[in-house]
Length: 279
Image (cartoon, rainbow, N blue to C red; front, side):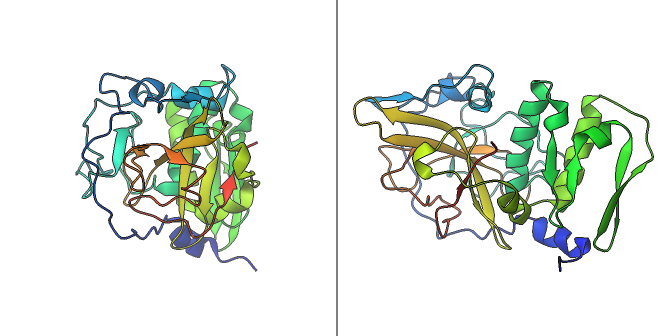
């Protein structure tokens, strides 16, 4: 039997436990300070090129995400600076909200949902809650709202229909309350690591658990070996940020399929390789 949804609210929170802190990087030559989007801020190592992405794909959208000015600190939902400021290469320019909701799995959900919203694919915006309930945006924009009693979850029409972005954001906040690493891990199919692509996720479901998104992928022009960038949210809720690689100062912020799977970041070591995809 599934846990009551009130309990699911607790375990939906990221619950991430920091790994031991490795030394911070002092130089990162692949970071281009003037770049205003992901693909312009993060260069590729010599001998590599970014993998091809269709112009309307999730990967292309991720590469075009705006980043805040170089050196911007990661801030928590309450405006305070995060305690550790040596873990990120860049901060994604997406607001976090003013409550402690958008944590690790939620940040991945946010990016996927924002892509579908920007593409006008409203009927595809849907995520499973921890108890298995499918919470789709189509119901929400039609005026239905989520009702919860113990482990029972259902829709009731209590609001006027709306296609406003504010309606979309309120929908996401409710998803963040009741979804998390456990639900996202169950919802998404496994992806062979050799086929790693922008938008894929490393997920370890649980409490604690964690999720990080592959925000870009490049490959060696001769060997075809792939490297990737990781982005994450964390707890407390904070800016989504692109991670540095604590394992290779020369390659950072890129991670390698040769040496960094499962990836170990400054704040989390995935116990095993569990790469998942949206499609």
